Image (tube, rainbow, N blue to C red):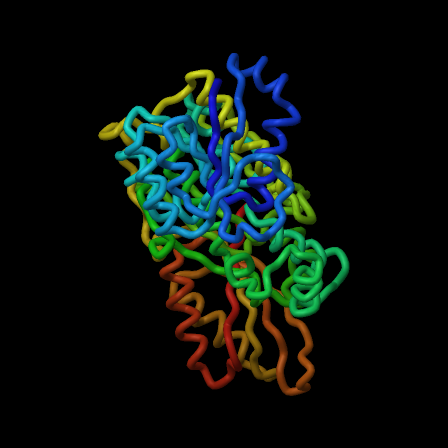
Length: 420
């Protein structure tokens, strides 16, 4: 018999405890041993929980319990769960976590501390989609060329509404909050930080990259307008918030941002709150993983899959690489990112302005691929919309800085990256 202790019996924790109870027979048949949830930890004991397990408000009641074999960490946060997981590992207990923030900052320290003890984390990234297992095991024969993922259902829901129904950003954000998809402070979701934590986890498995959120490009969806949506439609693009890991000759690009992608691509067709991850391997080609990225039962499904794996004795390097045998790839700086770009700006509606703008782009070594001019509410101005041929981020940054100080250019010059 294997006994489970749960740190954090909230929505997901309750689902884990209940699935272990209600599906006990099939889980025992698949794992080869009986698995039971013994106890759990909550912050507020007076709040009613839909579980039959013993509850405590002291995490050490689980971590220091000699009968507990596997600790499931579902608390959220970074430093407190880090200390608790360290103690659990030091006590010789296997750990399963769904905590993406914890892993975004401390995955390499935890791998070193875990050693041969299992530390599993399938539920930390893309909810019920088994992307961690796919990268660690199913695609182990491949050099991973790229990962592109819709990893935040809130942003995907909002963008789907903006594109399909013409909703404005502020309106659809309020709707997402009313439906419970977005928090009262939505910054973690709409600012791209949630997706960034997940991307960092995937990039460690794919490339052995030890980066923190502060080391990579993280942008959100708050600057997208219906002007951008209309342009994307006219030129055959969809707009998605993507987490992108891309292997280049001299390293790996890691970035999270709103992205224009061709409408015919598989990932462009993913709408609503669903998540999807496209992985390109050098041998298998493109594989696509699709499913619910959040929710109690979906996330609990991934947690329990890890528990079953541990009980079966399946394990290996936590992050997919034996220490000292990583890929050797380095994280590229923001300036080294290479892709296509979209630019939106407001300019004076007079002769010579277009020539001046294109001259600034040309001076930075940027070639224009397409251009569209849209009317502005002010009759003396127009909106200029450009896409560029492939260039480096350093070039587009230089050009934007030059454009912003031109008297004929008004307000912010908005940039969005394009992946073809």
